[in-house]
Image 1 (spheres, rainbow, N blue to C red):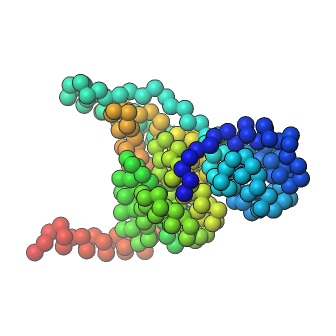
Image 2: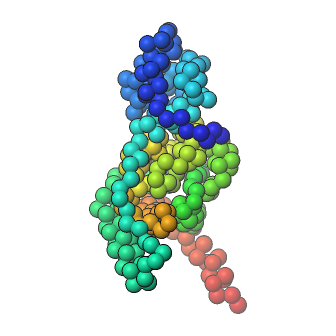
Image 3: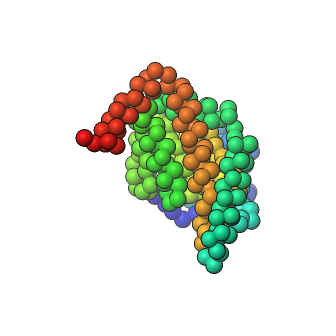
Length: 287
């Protein structure tokens, strides 16, 4: 996978546009006319929109300095996404225990409250419906988001839904490449700017897979790739520059998502939950 970011798709296109001819100019025009639409398309759809060919799309991408269509599309998502950060409170290593407890408590309460108030119930229900009907669910997450992905996967599997978490970029590439229209792909990224997760979602979307993002940044690059975006509170408390309270907001959101999927599962889901509970009972109380 390519990892180097080459921002400025729109700026590069405007620079080269006067010198473009024929099919390349048609592709460029389609992108400039509606970049928000193009960023969600696969290469075939862009070729059809511009009345050209897939090879023309690839040639334009390479002329702009990208390895191909997907590389250009991901960088376009970065262009369109808002990656600005708000001023977040930070826990200092020199803080006393009481100060740390106070900062952490208020940050978590504020984050959970704001996540509840801004929750898009319609989007969450739509996501739950797709997950409920999916052949398999692929979850892409790295770093601090990995624990959230594992928690969601564990709960969905209890409902009898085949679910797998991928945090390695190579495994993400494999899983996204073999996904199809009967699957669902979920990308979890606090910043909404994780390159590997965005690329995995981009590949799955081109395969016709329903894509869902879970992020704290409503207008981040990942929301430009995903068809459904679920957002938590953007407010954060940092420890050595790393997000801390966002874990609670993410877990709160995926718990609601799991419970909504469970409500759609009816008797089959309850039966799976009971089987799991019976199997785990022996482990919890051996002998």
